[in-house]
Length: 495
Image: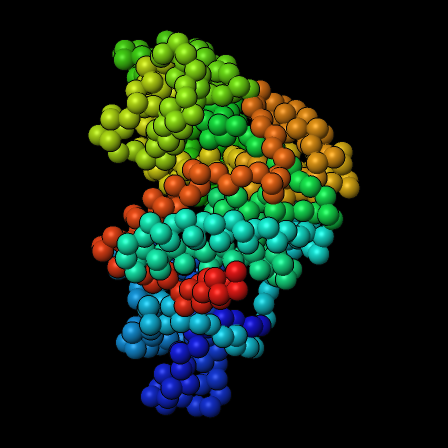
């Protein structure tokens, strides 16, 4: 088994002072290589790391890697300032978080071979995996866009930190594109949010339009207003009370214990909850006998086929929003779904509109966030999305169009242009059948001749300014890797 480790980490020298036998020394060395490879950041996995450079590594996995040398190796690596452990670790409650110190993380990596059998379970995503092959290509025109982005932003930057952040970003893009050019693909399905991640999902959306499969143009079909649509799909009695595949119990049973799930299920969509929402006394279980409250049905009846964010704006103002106004409403609603800071929520226009026109929905979001936490609520929606797209839509589309390639980016499916109509029909039919709500879908041809979106450059510029402040840069400097900078410099030299 080959693993990546920093080229400046001298493991034989580290373990010399342990005075181990030659046989034991060899095993300890390989265990250290294995552990370090799990906390090494590359262009492929850097999004999995927290902003401060830590990454999760639960005790179960640590024990599998280190077994009887668990304490010996962790103590050694901490004492030698190779790694840092998160002080907030709670056994049985919160996973270990480990950080590889910057002097090693930022340096180039080398491959080491260890005598460890790499056990892999049969892939549950073999169908999607199979399309990552030599038929997938990326057109060379991407180089013009990368150069244009660099030249445009470079003239606006005023200090070295900003330039490093820009070059680091571009280096990640170029290395990911090189993986496509050299057929060095990676793909996996997350065990946490169930999303399918791949070489394609790792790069900004602007580079999708340069992709071709078997020299054919590609199209993507997106689920519009996906997070709000997914929320509407779970706001019903059956989702919380049944044990179907698309149910709270099945979606959350690996995140929450059975007792916790049972407590939540007994309260949500109960007469007590509805009485609380209606701000009246609960007089007994027979007072409210409806299974689903009409306020939730009103939300499910919203025009998701068109555009929910525009709909919310029109309810208040009587006219359609501008692009900027719609984007602002969408941003506010995303905050509603994934943050629970009550004071900040009160300042957002989108929150005010949701509370005004769909008060029970807003109360439900707060209620379930309070019960499961904002992280688990986010995972709930992401898992529902993954179940619907990966487990329901993809197999049905493949059944109807055996020859069509399939790539997914979370709530979006990509295929060749000749199959776009069938893909659109399948997505609509399957999602409507599974949720009872008609979805809105958008179809876009991935055309390399389309101009670069100015909003993308603005987003990159804003992100650079945010990350290059003195305090922010200090926290994230671990992620400015030599490999990324060198790759960008080499590209600029040749283009």
